[in-house]
Image (cartoon, rainbow, N blue to C red; front, side, top):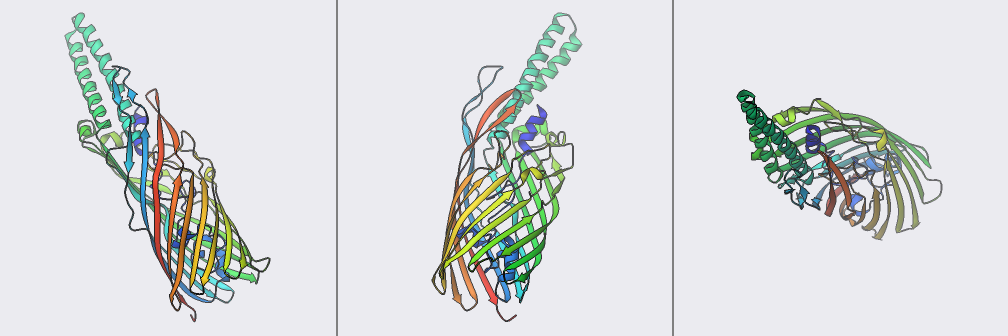
Length: 464
């Protein structure tokens, strides 16, 4: 019972705002928002993330790109039915929805590419996982269910202790009767506190994984380029559950911890131009092993059940494939496919293992040069996640999705490009079945709203 309770409090992966895999992020530039098919990119510096070998086909010079995304979102988990108290027959937890509506105003990215003849060097910075704060001011369905079911267990203990006290009193054993009476009072008080906390607590989680990527590419021929890169990631997670009703049990009203991890991985890329106007690309990144070390644990309820001081939440290996074609002088179309090998990564939490199936994302997009100085873009994408009815992120639901993106880039002055992009994402609801203290309850996971827009600037120094 105790492990079930605090697994529900702690088992989250990240506060991801948009992802192609369970952890891995794909919205790494303004270019992605305006056209999510990025895997054949070989003209713009965000190739430093999406298609590292494509940097070898860019024009000579130094490129510097920076942008920021603004994200409007609503995440929701719902208990669709009342949870009954089997001890009394009354309602232990009422059906309701729990919402997070935290907006994100700072979500930066940057790319640098230096191209000279057949060689290119590149660097990328971005938020590779997590990237946001979730605030459920009225708690969540999972934490409420955990508190309520734990309260029922204490209630049962109180009834057992009271029955034992009555038996001892009838037998004239006043000492044990008093001890059982005291145990009954303590268990009853704990049950009352937990049941009250189920309807009176808040939940906050803040998770972000920063990534830095550095590498180089080489055009072996006019039709083939290769690339190698290394990626460093730093992850930070903070979780906090607060309720004034837990003070007596918990030694304070806060249950929380911090955790951090460093990871490193390598990437390999190929880009071929087998026919005039045709681009074919492939890129593979191995997993980033993220071994989180827990610190600053608060609350006796947490410290009792978080036995280990570390856990693994990796970024899964990912294969990126792309095909693009210059249909005519102003029109370029492309398709991209990303496959995430989640089953080759350890996506665990502080209390145990989380098993996910593999995920994929497929996208189709187009860029059209309206005039020499203005290019319009649009694209669509579908993401299929590797979750199950019992493996998901309750607080930040991992859901299949469909997205539409559009945008424009304008050469405002010579060598300076201003890019704007917008994306709307439709998520498909999914049920999650949580078990606690012999009860199984359905939680409906949804993301009713996710709208992103971004602004980016690119400067090209052609003579460097």
